[in-house]
Length: 138
Image (tube, rainbow, N blue to C red; front, top):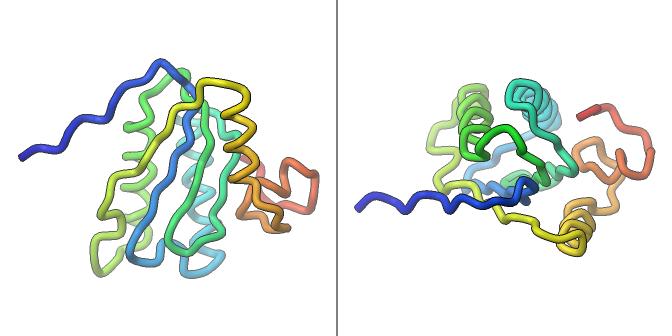
């Protein structure tokens, strides 16, 4: 039986999460590579990144605005490219990514607060929002 299509939404701001049973990020080199691929996708598909968190080894979170492109095409490109880089022994992304539309400023602030965990890490957008020492410019 085919899977159900992703529901289309009129919201252009989305909270995206992806998890894996295998480690996605075994070290900071993997995280750096993922952020570089995210930056390439951002330029190619013309979307904005409001927040991100790569602190877990088996998941990531993104808060994005996608006015020009369907989120499925963006994530498909990003995940295929990253999987090609990782060359996992099994299926890296066995589940589809999840996306939750953001319709209000209250929802936006709530998601920003949850994604921007207070961590002085370049792999979490908290440091960007609070002008701490970061190496990534997304």
